[in-house]
Length: 116
Image 1 (cartoon, helix red, strand yellow):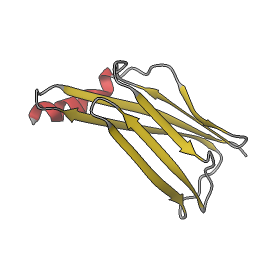
Image 2 (cartoon, one colour):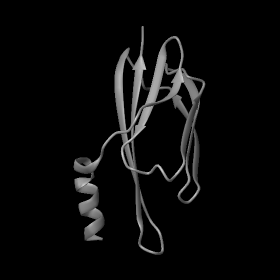
Image 3 (cartoon, helix red, strand yellow):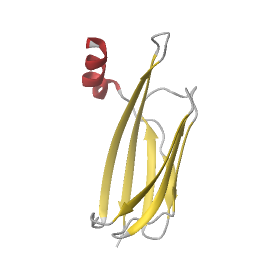
């Protein structure tokens, strides 16, 4: 348990972003992400449909990571959040431990660019 806490606290020191992947691109919105950990042996895919972020609009977000076939699909609705044009950065980290005590971590940096 103590090792997991230390790993979480110091994960920011050891993360290195890889190349950026375009998640969606429209006339008003661009979203891209990069993987921070060396997990090239595991397949990662994500999608957003439709590529629009405005108040009162809903979209579907799908994420799939295959060390253990983790698939997440979530409908997200912007009803009370108003995003002004600008650049937003989102950071997410996921750590899994299997029965053989192998720790696999995934770190994702996502950047959202909203144009006028």
